[in-house]
Image 1 (cartoon, helix red, strand yellow):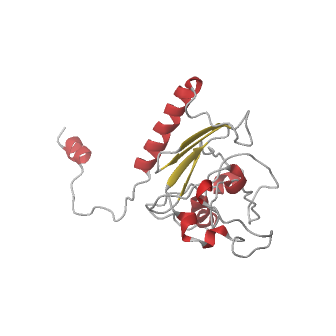
Image 2: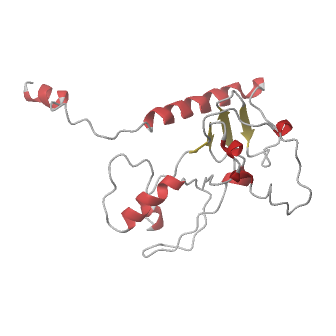
Image 3: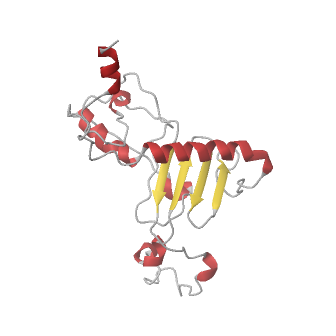
Length: 199
């Protein structure tokens, strides 16, 4: 599961990779899986498990079929978004250091407005992760051979095709997830239906 709440605008697994634990009526468990889940999947899963229709415009994917032991196609990737408008602070900009580990001025970094400056998006599969930030910083990590995300491969010529593939996936995801609501009710005709009627 990918999650980023009250941490900061970095997409490393040490911040975003958390377990998603489920106990629910009809759950065919216990089972453990490495498949990817997003926070937006929780609401449609709850509705689906309760037999309530999932409203149009919902971005998440219901996990109910998987939990019930039915046919289910896991997500190919997850996308993480974070940040607000503004230029993010760099580590070199933070010149005041805490005096001791429990110095409450620094205990919760997210309490500072600057911690949220700078938008970014991340796309992750089980093997790769691409992070793109609005200030132009980019990261590409080989999660199979570099689980600690220490070696940024973004500019490495060897990984150009991987980088391009993930940039395309992220672009398509961004277009697909654009807000579809409110629904356009001003147009009443459907061309395919009219065409079939006069064929």
